[in-house]
Length: 258
Image (cartoon, rainbow, N blue to C red; front, top):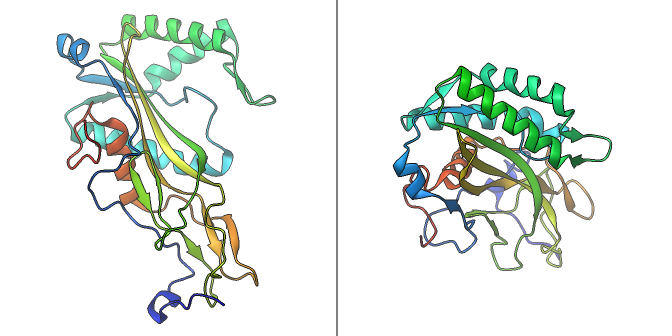
């Protein structure tokens, strides 16, 4: 027996169905770290948005979307009064540091060389202090991780402050009643880390964006598959950015209790 989908929904099943969070308390918000006193003592006005990741780079199938997310992060910072210096300031300093310490990330093992990363950051910080008047370095990293939908009536998935409905794709008669909604699937979130120019970490948080898997209704036995169009909703991306930056930049209607 299958759940019969409404005719109106059936007409749009070829596109991804998602849901922006509707506000209200959400216990999954990330437990951010925020050095309010340090920032108040030395306000941050000019920033460099790092074009590299703190950890492993996003998977290849997400890298195009990551560029879109970073562009939206830049817009968000500027709309909130921050001056974002050109990327080349960081890129030139990072390349110079990498020649000394080697590659930070080894794609063959998928691991970060912590000593190389620390050395590269120290050198990059020295160069930026010498050559620019930036107040901080901001890392805004898109990353994937596992989530699961609930077995409740609406099958929401909730993580890092967001609530998302299951995504559906393809035409079909519906989702089986006995479908296992609790399967672990991949989702994408934004991790934001802010270092002041002395390389003290003054802020760190995360915000959920969207799931990366949908229920494929074209199959005789519908199953989760990687979505054909990932992270297409700018509303979902904007929500993730706002969550990831709060309270460094205050989010209106923040769903946490802090």
